[in-house]
Amino acid sequence: MSPDVIVNAISKVLPDVEERLTVRESQQTAFRLYVEIPPERLKDVVEAMAGIEIPHFSAISGDDLGDSIELSYHFAMGCQDNRGEVVTVLRMKLPKDNLKLQSLTDLLPGTMTAEREAREFWGVEFEGLPDKRHIFLPEDFPEDVHPWRKDEKGLKGMIGDETGDQ
Image (cartoon, rainbow, N blue to C red):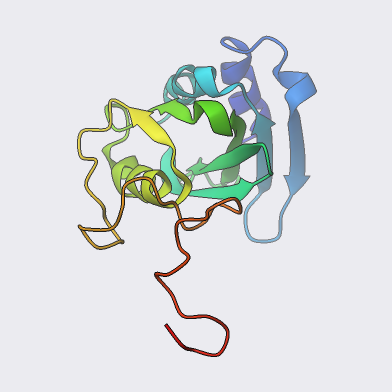
């Protein structure tokens, strides 16, 4: 599959997509396509990609940028194409005072585990996520403590200090 096919589909919902993307050739796959998108357009972009073929969801990765959390949804497109697959990464920045994103579980049920993980570790609230229970942290772990955030203060007292004492 050519990255142009994906870019053309996304351009139907994000006309300025050319200004938001990076394409790299890869040794493992044919291409890697990175697209910066507004968070509120995630579902529209994934639906546009699904108009070509159902994207193979891989993972959500994240980074605490200080005043925002950057989430990246990783997909593979064209896995069965003899021209090679295109790893497509949709990146978006969510301000920490508005950590909300539409869940993709109604389009791609396989995103549920990763969205639950991002919810408990980053504090992102996924609107429409059908199951909001903890998936990795204990059930009694505080809902307002998010271990992967740099500004998290709620872990103090839960873990030992550098000497190993609790």
